[in-house]
View 1 (tube, helix red, strand yellow):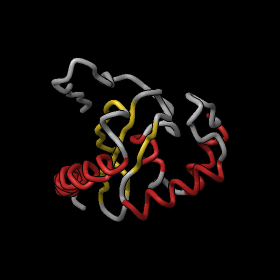
View 2 (cartoon, one colour):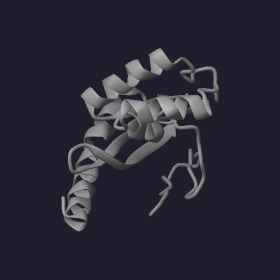
View 3 (cartoon, helix red, strand yellow):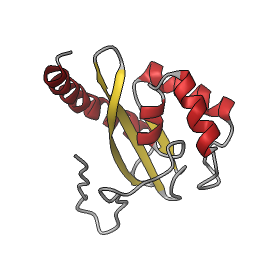
View 4 (tube, helix red, strand yellow):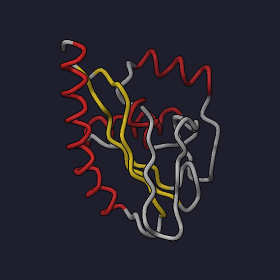
Length: 143
């Protein structure tokens, strides 16, 4: 299920259910990508490339792989105006079983309201929700 909730502020950064964005320029995409097997990631890079979406988008495989390693260690991904100028995002993967990625949850907003400390704080909150979803999915899948 895809869902997007909007904040109460007059200016919003919104993702619409069913919309698509580049995997390497979004926090959600990077949170998922980080937990895919290396051969799968390499195949995606070959098939899709790493085109720039904004001037902040990582377009080199070695830099992206470094970010993905950090994401695996930290448990969350951050998009610093990499997909849309003026918008920042943090995402946490939804993992099932032995680190099989099933999706991700994110919170995004205006960069002026969502600095790095705020993104890190939000990561801890959404990690709790991602964990709850992981447990429900594991129960459903028999993991």
